[in-house]
Image (tube, rainbow, N blue to C red; front, side, top):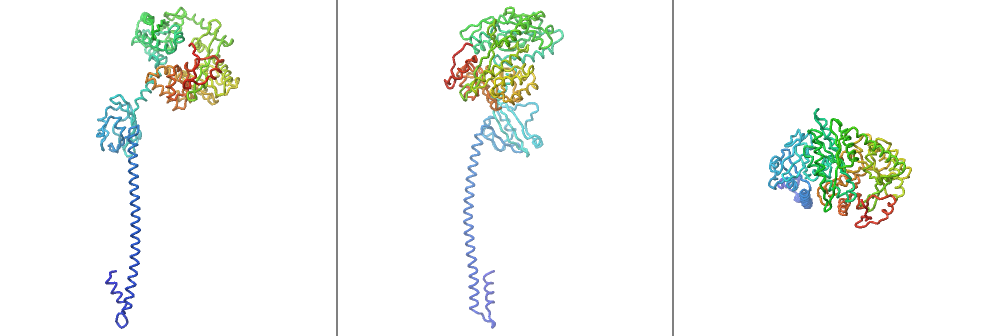
Length: 632
């Protein structure tokens, strides 16, 4: 209410009955009105003061929030630009909204190229490389419908400098996408190398036995009715003596030279493979036989008769060859290989250094095999076998943690017979079951005398899975020795799984459920397959010695070794590296955090009576027990 109107109202209220104004009454009304308004003014002042204080606090909070936001923004920028992976974000119109430094580095882009609003097409045109397209892989711009049907896409780019960049693209519901980019060059090359090794011999680079069989299968299937196909089985005479006298590393170098000479003789039109340690095979097609294969054999013999050199040492070699010709000597791969092997055995029996064509009368050769078979049976009965033990060395604990049992045959007439000379025959005729049963019992009995924490590893043949009750044999051996199942480790090769996966897996699971450890032996020797690692939870993988030879000086060999060790670690499997012969190899494997090693640098295989002595030796030279040298 306005002041004038309020005053007139108060004057009206102060009028007396006679029409005059009661001055005292008017004064009281005015004073009362003033006091009311004075109280209102105080309340307003207090409210204003409260608002001012609250506004000051709010300003302080806003300032603190602003500073915190600036800090978080700086932290986000630091993290974004120091990520080891490239990051990019594109909106629904496929325009760049966010990227980091690694993204620019991976694709060879400049800061100017990454200006806000740059499209995928713009950046693709400026990248120093091209996208690697594969069947079924969609590239380019993704529509909203495409985004809804598939939220994750993978793209690969081959850069001009040889690098391979992989992009994992997450497509959001609105059509925008977030991508992570990584340089997978090293991983891809290691994977390709492992795939290559699945079909090739790592030492010589030649096709391995599995690949060779595939080639023979295909060639026989495509053979014309009037076409002859020759298969040559080569074996270096007494090559094992070179390994024994010069060492395995020297033997491997000579084998590489042998492979080069045979490759040059065979020519590119024929298929050459390495079947085993000192065995090769050649498949010759499109030629008039037997004249051309005879010429090929003579050429190979001349080439291999020239001296080989390892440093200043000169080595003389000779070769024996068995030849079988399809279709006369067989129309199937197994038969052709067998007959070539029979002819090879005949060539060796005739004095070596020659070739022999398969002939039906060579069946007499089987009589000699029957004699050896009889000797093997007698060996089991007469206990002519003995076990030697090679230490398994735990790198983290720096001690011997177990031993691998290796069979030796002390023939009363022939003397010491190497395992490679009788184990293949034992497998062919089924005696490996009896021999394997004896090895299991002897190894468990020996291990029962060792300290509680020392395990024993025993090799198991594929024949033992198919031709015997392996689970029962193992149980009986453990029970007879009163040995804990956890101290027994069974080593199998990929060939065991290849024979009959469905039959072998239940046996392996039954053994593992008892607490017995299962190890994949000779991983990477030519026919290893990563799929087998996923088919069964192995406790350990053993890397073949052929991977160890060059890991100190060869970066690629080192990278492959590292990849396999990481693979084992990722799968929760211990990794043992075989064939460690030098301190340098051991030191490198320690750096890669390998679990176990085995090889002559620790100790050669020793008789059972020497095991206590091996266990008593203290670690030396960085934790490695230096043991007396032995002839190989």
